[in-house]
Length: 240
Image (cartoon, rainbow, N blue to C red; front, side, top):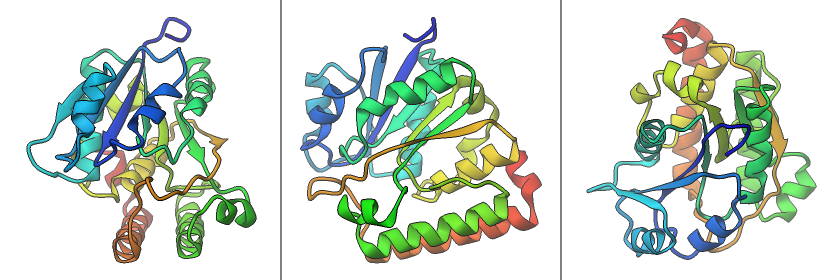
């Protein structure tokens, strides 16, 4: 609980059994509930989550990253969340940062918060981010900033927090079921002019952390470019 507001963390999970416990143990005490949605993992992610006392929902079949988030947000709203924090359970993002995202929203400075990893090329590469991912992240973020008129340091983070009102007013249910869901969501936030803030997050790439391979990253990048172009020529679509 923060300032009388219910805080729910959602974990969109797929084969995260190796890193799940570390992620959960590092979450701050202000978190009231943790919801894990397992996207038909091939390991014991759901079983371990239940052992850790999480609320667990399991998809019957693999539906995709975007579809996983849709289930996460639907459940969080049904459970009465005032602030919803989405963090990947692969321990690539530091769960301790959740308290900062929550405080900025809870104290009414912002309605959406991002944990962004890109502060310098040296730091990103030293944290294990592959060079091609760093370059792609920079190129896509520059494009998205130019199209949107914003100046975010990163558009492609897996650490995000939302005020309840945002999730009630944005039509995220119509977004992609795949990884481009995140980009669509941010353009919807920009279109509706929500207050959007950032906190720095350390870069942590390691073997157990989930990551898109080169070809899936390429498809994701092309999909992101299409979303940006669509926003450029039809921003009203993202407001509806």
